[in-house]
Amino acid sequence: MIRKQYLFNSKQLKISSKLNNLLSQENNLIDRNCIICNSYNYQHISNTDRYGIKYFTGICKDCGLMQQYKYPNNDFVNMFYEKYYNDLYSFFKSPEDRFNSRFKSAQYKYDIIKKYLKNNIKNSVLEIGCGSGGILSFFQTKNYEVYGLDYQNDHLDYAKKKNITTFSNYKKINRKFDLIILSHVLEHLVSVDDVLAKCKNLLNDKGIIYIEVPSLESISEHYHYEIKNFLHIAHVTHFTKKTFMNLINLKGFKIKYINSKIHAVIEPYNSENRIINNYNDTKKILRKNKILKLIFLPFLDIFKIIKKIIKILIYK
Ligand SMILES: [Zn+2]
Image 1 (cartoon, rainbow, N blue to C red):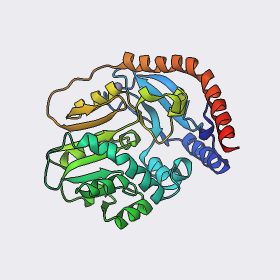
Image 2: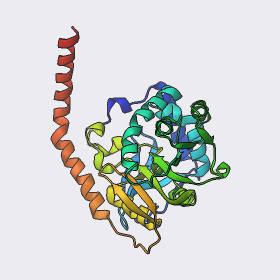
Image 3: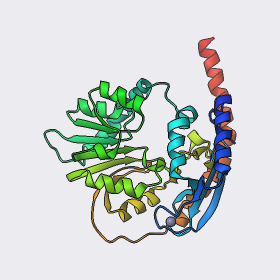
């Protein structure tokens, strides 16, 4: 069952059918080897995302990472983000809306981070995918030097107005940082390796990275326990806690903190790590969601009706 808020309006429907036509053309969709173990051995999960856009999802049988095994080529992805992403998925009406929402979310991140960051007089932070700078602005109130990287110019302009130093690409960054924040960024990237390697080079000695990615283990009420509601074309990978830890360890980092929502603090660490196969664990998580869906779905409508009755009684 697709949730009502995931049904498109007419403009979005036009865009999704245009995207599907483009994706049907030769060479626009390419086979992707597993981001963790580089094999091409998938259990197929879905042909489309939650809006019906072509989106081939599978679980890697050799390491358990759920991901896109066919995904648009880089030119297509760039064009998608420039032209269509905001119209399809923008949850914020303006850079200011996004700023306010991110600012509110920052205290939580700050409370985790401060336990793991060396206490310098003035720490520096770079947020990759900073948008309009809400998180950075909060860190500014805690006496951090703040820097943001993003590709969306209207959002970066807003961040500049808040006295945040901004970069529109990596090449322009000419210094190192005590902290790098990647909040809901990694799951969008085809080149996770490349970005993690860049982060490593941009860290000061004893620097740390704070990461948040959506977790397959939290397909709860928000997604009606339905895997399809969780999938959308902008996401390339779908982590569980175990597959995330596998990736991070293999790419030369140590996990200093991680919780069940996959909010994590990591630091560079050189050691030999072997790939762990979490295929059975990922399948178990998907099975658990299917069972929870059967149990809870009938009650969701009852909750909605009760909510409506309470509203009527209060606001009548
Ligand atoms: Zn794999």
